[in-house]
Amino acid sequence: MSGQEREALKRVEGMASDCGGLSWSQAIDRLIAIRKEVHAALAARGDTERPDGAGLIAAERNRQRGKWGDRHDSTHDMGELLDAAILYATPPDRRRRIDGVLDRRQWPWNWASFKPRVNDRVRELTKAGALVAAEIDRLLRDTEQSPNEEIG
Image 1 (tube, rainbow, N blue to C red):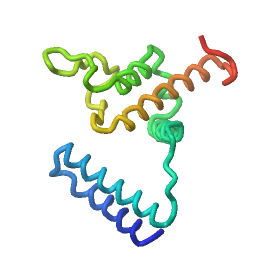
Image 2: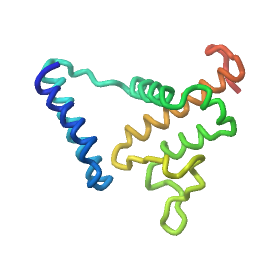
Image 3: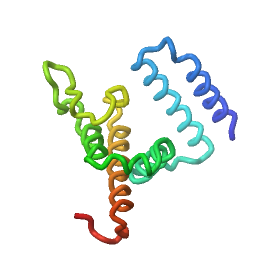
């Protein structure tokens, strides 16, 4: 790991300890700046490959699976995973509102767990894609279909 990469990682660790006084948008701005530094460090060592959409979705799905697990996903058999995916996939200006406030009924779980990034559509679409993948995984597990069979 280069010195530039180590410095960027130290900043990430420092940020985790001092974000308490920042607003949500300030914290996001700092994270974006740090992400740019990490990309610059990788580019400096010649690693300029960026993941594609499928790679981002796969990484997010793995993160979700590590946090919640397949058994937990299987409990969401009433379309909740797809409801969450739809909300993340919907552009922020097209999300249903009541009196100017986002309609919480669109989100299938505790409202605090909805974490939109209105200035980062790639991240929101990555979450949406991973939630769709979670639903597909759940259907394949629960119906014992092979991945080559059509669902539906």
